[in-house]
Each structure stands twice: as C-alpha cells, then as structure tokens.
Length: 473
Image (tube, rainbow, N blue to C red; front, side, top):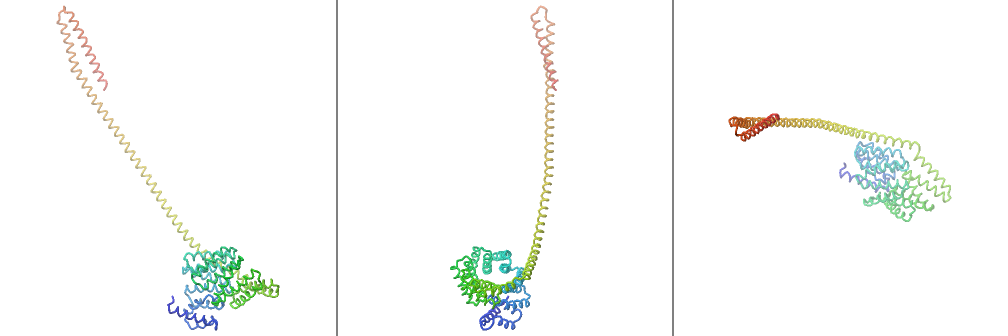
C-alpha cells in the first residue's frame, strides 16, 4: 500500500501533467517523469493514468501499460494493469487482444479473491463483445452484475447498469434499456461522477432518439457534451458529436448531421478510436448519398469498408474464438474439479447416511430379536405360572376331597358305632321282651313286633346310608 506522502506526490505529478497537457502532450510529459522514478513508483503512476487521457491516445497508453506489466510481479498490479490494457485495446479496435487481457485480468482478480473487480471485468467484457456475440455479451454482463450486486458497489454497478442498457438497446428492448440507463444515472449523480454522468445522459438521449422522442433527447445530449468539453474528454466529445449527428440523421436532416459527423471523425482519427471512425464514415456515406453528393458518399463508403476490414477480419475472429474457448475450457475444468469435490462430498455423505441406516437397521433387528426373546420368556413364565396355579388348585381339590372323605368315614363310623349300636340294642331288647311276656298279652306283643320291625327297618336304612357315604369316596 502507498503511504499518504507518496499518494500526494503522485497526485501532484498528475496535476502538473494535466495542467501542462495544453502546451505539451500528456503522455510525453508522463514518459519524461517516469524516467526519474524507481520501478515501483513508475508502476503506480502508470496505474493512475485518467480514463479520458487513456482513451484519447490509446496507443501511448497501451505502451505504458505494457511497460508497467513488465516492471511488476505483484498480482494486484498485474490484475489492474491488464484490466486497463483491455479497455485501451478495445478503444483502439484490437478486440482479440482486448479479450485476451480481460481474461488475464479476471484470472488475477480471482486469485486475489476480489469479487468486485471480477464482476467489473466480466461486465466490461460483456460490453466489449456486444457487436460480435450479443448472447455471449449478455451472459458475461449478467454474471458481472450478479457479482457486483452481491457486494453492492455503487460505482461499479453504475457502469455495469449503463452498459447493460446498451445491450438491451442493441436487442431492441428499449424499455429495459431506459430502465438500466436511469438506474445508472441515479447512482453517478449521487457519486458526482463527472465521467459517468455524461455517459448515462448520452445513453438516455440515444434511447429517446430511437423512440423518436427528439425533444426529450436533446437536453440530455447538450448536458453531456458540456461536461465532456469542460473536461477536455476527446473520446467523450467524439461520441457526443456522433450522437448529435445521429440525432439529425434520424430526422432525415442530413445537411445538419454532416458537420457533427465530420467533427467526430476528426477527433477519432486524432485519438485512433477506430470503431467510431468507421461508424462516422458509414454515416457520412449515407448522408452524402441522401444529399446526392455521390463522390463524397463513395469516398466515405470505401473508407468505412477498409476500417471494417481492419476491425473484423477472419484471423481476428478466429483468435477471439480460440481465446474465449481457452478461457471457458479453463473455467469448465475448474468447475469440473469443484463439482468433483462436491460429488465426492455428496458420495461421502451418502455413504455416511447408508452406514447410519445400516446401523439403524441392525439396532432395529437386534431390538426385534430381544423383543422376541423377552416376549417368549414372558409367555413361558406366564405358562409356568398358569401350570403352577393349576397344580395348586389340583392339590387344594385333592386336600379338600381327602378331608371330605375323612369326614364321611367319621360320620359313617359314628352312625355305625353309635346309632347302629343303639338300634341293635333296641331290637335285641324288644326280642327279649317278647320272649318273656305271657302269651295272654297279645296286643302288647303286636306293638312290640311293630316296634321291632320299625327298628330293623331303621337299621337297614342306616346301613344303606353308610354304604352310600362309603361309595362316594
């Protein structure tokens, strides 16, 4: 990190360079100052080149960015320098090198885990690819905006929103384009960003021109041009002159459009803004054709074709495709490795779950077996208890029966020994009485015989009862 003293030193140098820019070329002055500085401070001063100076002389800026890359081995420096170099290549029209250095910047920022810059470069790369591969441009832009919204960096989002609006405009979705242009303008106005404000204003104005709302468009163009003129932003002024030309061209006011395209063309040649130079040549060819100046129309048409060939030749497109394929392949390989790690973790998790399920099943089976044995043991004990109770009951019955039999024997003995003996004595007494009585007392004799018969009958019944008791054992 730079100390405050060094930061003030670099700011002072830049201020001197900017002030002296009118009398002496900015990059010549910068090159002179760089020779007096150590390598590390040279790198820091090159990194501090303002955006409007960079895009006003892209060739000189590219040379210095390459010089700084060769001087530094710091990843943070290399990431930023490649990012700026990609933008410079883009404005110069070297699209293959622009893509290559953008991808290089993304690699460094990813290694530094700098989500803000990864998102910004993705968004920038999406914008750069808009005229070559619009679906791919949307893909990179959406990836960049998603990353930037995660960290809510307002300055980076303002640029991304504006550039996303351009993609929607190219896709003929003007409502979405205006929505993102307005979002970008709100942010840059809050930040008082003198570079971002005119960019947003121009985008909104262009959208209104496409919608044929010319009265609403002009104030935005004028406000943007005034800011850029005050900053001496040659790149921005060239874009504004082109926008003014488009403003009149759309209304078929070709004579009024021509001076603005010529002014823009003059600046683009000066700053080597090849793509915008091609656009101006195409528009001038159409304007002169519509005003019947076919000589000038042919001149600018030839120049537009030549510029277009230099921008988009077969070799360049092939290189771009190869670079994108290489980058995507590396990204996919990285994603595959990450996915393999995720898959391995998931497989491990599945195995752990399987082991857990097996353990649960084993515990369940063990519980079932234990339950079975416990239930069986309980039933066995219940059966033993039932059997014991049955035997107890049987013993009780036998004991009761034995007591009953003993009681019957006792009763039958008592009947036989007591009552039986008494009845036998009575019978014997009656027989003796009958023998000793005189024959004359017949009536008494008959009574004694009846009593004898009754007694015999009683003893007979007593024996029957005793036999009955004895049979019931």
